[in-house]
Amino acid sequence: MLKFTAEVAYTLPSNFNINSGEVGLDQLDLELEPSADLRLKVIKAYIRLDEKLKKLFVIFESEGFMPEPLEVDQEKVNDLERRLPEIFRDIGEYLALLLQLEYSLPLVLADVKISPIQIIDDKHKNIIIAVVNSLPITLVSVVLTSEKLFEPNNLRDAIKNAIDLVKLSEKQEMINLLKRIIKWYYLALNEFDETDRFIDYLMILEIWKLYKAYKDNDEKCIPIPKPRSSHKECLSKAIKDLCSKDVFSNWDKEFNDFYEGRNKVIHEGLLEEASKHLKVASECVEKIIEELRKEIQIFLQHNK
Figure 1 (cartoon, rainbow, N blue to C red):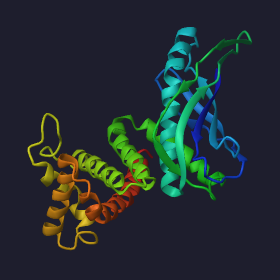
Figure 2: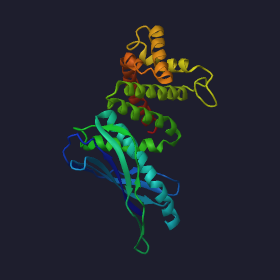
Figure 3: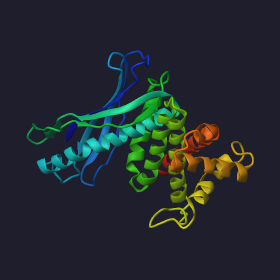
Figure 4: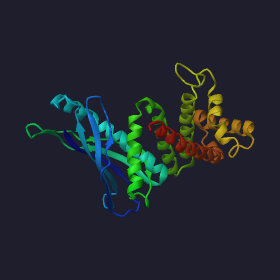
């Protein structure tokens, strides 16, 4: 049997007011299953807010088992050592994604640390230690929220769903696109400069365009080897259903105006155009975020 602890740390803005606190979740028993010959489970989790450090920590107590008649050996431990930081980084990213959609606490995923792995030999009662180096990871802003953060049921569901998303290996490319949308969304919310915020919104529209092309299997808009439809046509198809009614009242005219403004900012550097189209970009992105919540739930339902 293996035992180890994984710590995922997030930083908070220096001007963000929080109260220190901790909550523990027992009897999680959530399977990670990183490989066929090694079964990993998260047994317990602790969430800790540190007011002084301006950090939020999620600590996972985990165990691993080898199916009979396989035995744990150092080679398998070394392989696990290489894979664990990436596994828990993904869990940390998805946990932040799910909580930020539910609440609103600005977080930056700072680092992932894995404790030394204990190999417990039940036959000889020996404990072998394999040291796993901590893996510092620098990522961009993602967001969480506050008051309900320490409600155990909310945390339990969020951790389970984060692990479920990691296990959806065949859907990772699609889910990663949604993660990138959230990244740019919270960058946009924290931008003071209107032009920068507009460009962040444009990045979201571009990623959503790609997501929709893959989801709908629209070969004319998938850029590999190359799209067969124009960029404008593909963007229009991606957002028309969401944004045509409430955002663009006169779709053809207003979308054309918006697209021309986008081109002037991106291709010609006419930054003053950003403020003219910021409102519709913001409103359309909010529609995308609403739809993103539904898409995440679809992925989770698919995993049940």
